[in-house]
Length: 121
Image 1 (tube, rainbow, N blue to C red):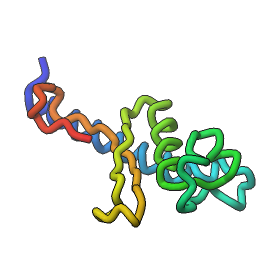
Image 2: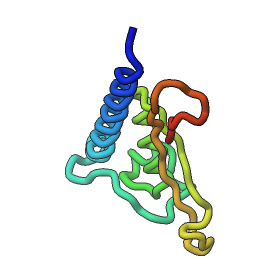
Image 3: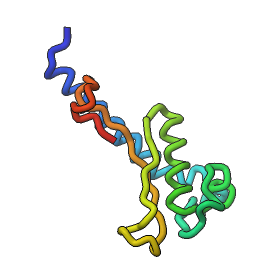
Image 4: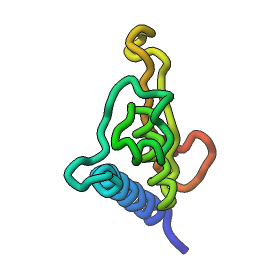
């Protein structure tokens, strides 16, 4: 039977592995899915809601933060990494500056999900 310290170590290793995979996908995804290898998918403000689904982002080669987040969430979920959308309707608290979206990745804590054990997005 595993000791508690072994469980904590394995969860720390899992967190490290998840972070490495997320970084690798985030670093490479935009060039891999690009229409041309010399032009990766890029950020372009003000495109929500016109270009935000994954196929439109790939087809156009750019999107706002919302479209980029949705595409990265889909890629992460495809390899089994739980991710979700987060955002604010008022960037820096000022509605005139528009909205902002990002994603959050779930990192398990110690494996005991009691809603207060450190599991976090």
